[in-house]
Image 1 (cartoon, one colour):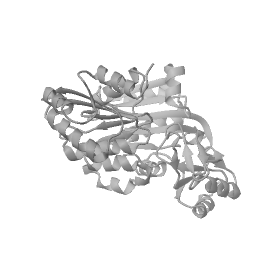
Image 2 (image 1 turned 30 degrees about the vertical axis):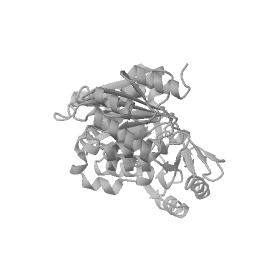
Image 3 (image 1 turned 90 degrees about the horizontal axis):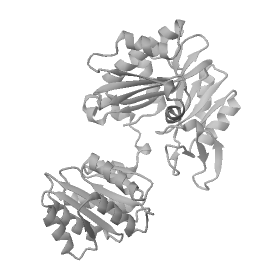
Image 4 (image 1 turned 90 degrees about the vertical axis):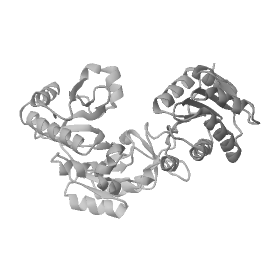
Amino acid sequence: MNIHEYQGKALFRESGIAVQDGVHCISVEQALTAYDSLGSQVVAVKSQIHAGGRGKGNLYDPDTGNLVMEGGVKIASSREKVEEYASNILGNRLVTKQTGTAGKTVNNLYVEAGCSIAHEYYLALLVDREADSVLIMVSTEGGMDIEEVAEKTPQAIHKAWVDPLDGLRDEQMTTLADSLGLTGSAHGSFVEMIGRLADMFVGLDCSMVEINPLVRTEGGTMVALDAKISFDDNASFRHPWRAELRDRSEEEETEVRAKRSGLSYVKLDGNIGCLVNGAGLAMASMDVIKLYGGEPANFLDIGGGANKESITTAFGIILEDPNVEGILVNIFGGIIRCDMVARSIIDASAEVGLKVPLVVRFSGTNHEQGKEVLESSDLSVITTSTLAEGAEAIVGAIGGGD
């Protein structure tokens, strides 16, 4: 679950992490009132969407598609500029590297007091599942995409791994501060901040906290000038208050519907629909499709307890995407039986009116029976024995590949 910057800043304040004063707004009038109340001549007018790269994005009119304004984060030094920027941001579609070409409609603004910036840094806390630890990454190259930093100056990224049970050690905090070249009050300010962030990360069951930029002010204070926070959904039962932070307008309607049916679905930009059981197998299926020159249209994991209803829902969701030109089904039978899946595919295909090429690969429990069920049916389907064969077949069926 993701939340907006203004919501993240509120959590930072509660945890004693330094942020600038700011006001959440949903109208131009509220933005002007916020400017008047902040007592700062210079303010940042920030689009609020669940995606990064807002400052480098572009705003488009949702009706005409015309460019309205470059940049979803603007610095205003007057009331008139606040009005101009708020008018251009609210209700328009912000397109960034992370939103795709469809972009996201901006319904929320954050007007934040200006800050005297001496230097910008990058800071992130993530879950490192392989190490069973919280990974902390810091860099002196703030304000840039971390992927770009990793590619061009990997030596500028410094890391520390924290046992969530033991907590962040004093020497780790000091080493991280030293790696950023911090001295004096800024060094102490960072040590205090990173300790509180680590406690917040574990205490709130976060999956990611990213601050880009984290800034050192002219006065030597470290301030979180951004707040990108994601929560671990598996821990939601411990934090019922999270429900109040959820902005469903930021979520894909199909992803919400899929979740209600016990499916894990994420829409992508390709043209080959994927229906798989198991997250790892789904990722492998997407990789092999790309290997053979195709592009997956989605990640879709039906789970181990799928039935006819959930498979029918899955087919329907895949086919709602107008970009889908073919479907690859890759099932490894364990608890789920391949012959049951085969019958469900036949029923689901008839119900949703399947008109695109379909390739099915079965392995595991009753996989031979499953293939026989499909091959003896009236359904137009290609069956394969391996994932590689399946991926090659579906890419070929839609006229893709090299």
